[in-house]
Amino acid sequence: MIAAFSALMLNGFREARRNRVTLAVVFFAVLLLLGSAFLTEVTVSTFDRVLVDVGLGVMSLLMVLLAIFLSSGLLGREIERRTIFMMVSKPVSRATFLVARLAGTMLTLAVVLAAMGATFFLVLMLYGTRLHPTQFLAIGMLWMELLLLCSIGFLISSFSTPMISGLVTTCVFFAGHLSPDMYWAAERSKNLPLKYLGKAIYYVVPNLERFNYRPRATYFLTQPAGEVLLNIGYGLGYAIAATALAVIIFQRRDFK
Amino acid sequence: MTHPIEVHQLSKTYRLGFLMNRRVRALDKLDLTVREGEVFGLLGPNGAGKSTTIKILLNLVRQSSGTALVFGREPSSADARRLLGYLPENPAPYEYLTGREFVTLAATLGGVSSADRPARVSQVIEMVGMGQHASLQIRRYSKGMLQRICLAQAIVHRPKLLILDEPTSGLDPVGRRQIRDLILEERRNGTTILFCTHVIPDVEAVCDRIAVLVGGNRVREGTVNELVTSSVPLVEVTVESLSREKFDALGVPFNEVHAIGERLLVRTEDAHTQALLQKVLAAGGRVTRLLPARFSLEDLFIQAMNESHHRVGGRLL
Ligand SMILES: Nc1ncnc2c1ncn2[C@@H]1O[C@H](COP(=O)(O)OP(=O)(O)O)[C@@H](O)[C@H]1O
Ligand SMILES: [Mg+2]
Image (tube, rainbow over all chains, first blue to last red; front, side, top):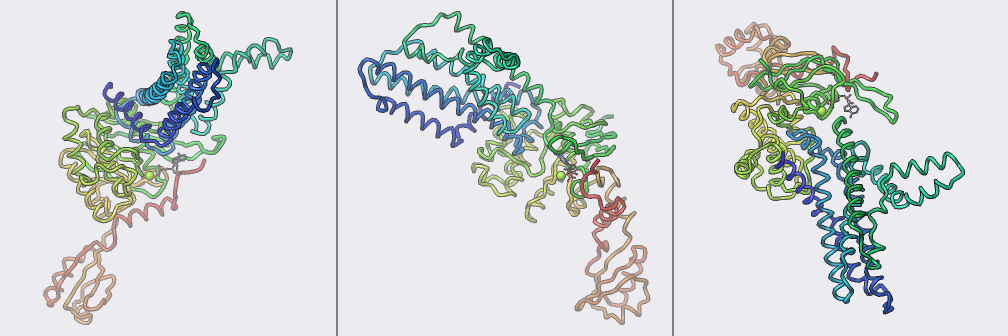
């Protein structure tokens, strides 16, 4: 079981490593991070903040794109191309297969994020910008956000096509960042259906703003640990629920 | 006594179309038993339901009704699948892996211990004749090479039951022969084999028993000999060094004679063969070939299809 799980997970990592899209994203990210200092007009007072903000922004954007690409593509393409036939016919449960595939994706994203993070801190050090714990926290919490997005990508892929899965996950990403605003708007709306729709979206779609520590990292603010732990718990809970649902659907489906 | 495969009243209806409102019956109350140690051929035209049967046995597809058991267990149990090796129709391995990496992954998933793995992987890669190409990425493989590497992943964990879906499709004659030899070799080791095909010579060469499926129904079942002798009693004899006139003068019953160059091609009923041979030899002729008059299974196959009114594919409901 454990041997099978880690073989599948590491294979997922190997797949990403040999995939041109992943390599292109990493290359592009390193380029952008290294160049971010040149892209900004150096005004002495805000230079540090802009550098942190741009760096974390670039990382977050590229990582989200990569996460959506990997999570909605992987499972769906396996089913479309029928590579899954020889895998799930082995003495490995479908649950193991799916969770190992997700773990492989998260491992890939962690390695890529670590590479980007290292470049980011290198740039900060080159320009003598202060390193701050919240910068690390922002990167760590970005990974939590990616975990959440990937679990949703896998959930949708467990019953639909890569296209639809990619689309839905992208929508969840935007709705997830707007969800506090939506709740606020819904509260004040006079239109009843709209009010309930807004609240429904708020409760179904994860609140991704919980994982956004970029603004605070930009201003070198520290965080209360309790709040951080709560947000980690929220992310894990949501990801586990989405993955459990994905496993249930995946176990029942025909591969034809 | 549990058999490697027991299928009872198995039916499968696929739902089609955007609203899932069109239905195709791919299998219709199929019964099938594959016994320990035999090579069982599942024969049938395109769309007969061969792949569907196999996919149900591998837990890729769920039946609509009926039972399918592998060594007495439901296909959904991983324990049942531990004893199973599977080569899909048009197999699709991970293209970004090399042949060796792919077979190694299969060995790990199949439960080959890590100590045994490298040697076993090399062994099966040699068995399928892929030793030279094992470190090449699979995306560079030809169809025949794909087929071979996927066969290697099917046998790497030493399964007791091999299920092969059209194993010789896309192979050149040499490849076909090698696959047939490999099937026979696995059989000698005591492996039970179920394979499906529409290539009749493959079936005749290796199968102990066969079943013919048409439109999701089993229309024939038996040993190759039973099915062949009960259906085609004709024999084709090639005679040399004997003129047409002399042959006619022998006075043996025959159905047709064709003079082709120096040779005579005689078709006769099986019951008259021995008498014919004696007289031809006595008259100074040479018998150079003796064959069943047609591809007997092919006949059977076509006959079975005709009886079921040439049904290609499942039944639309
Ligand atoms: N995924 C599917 N969706 C709908 N119909 C299918 C599907 N797969 C197979 N069928 C139908 O089921 C019947 C049997 O197919 P199959 O088992 O693949 O036959 P065979 O392997 O003998 O050629 C065919 O009529 C085919 O059209
Ligand atoms: Mg088929």
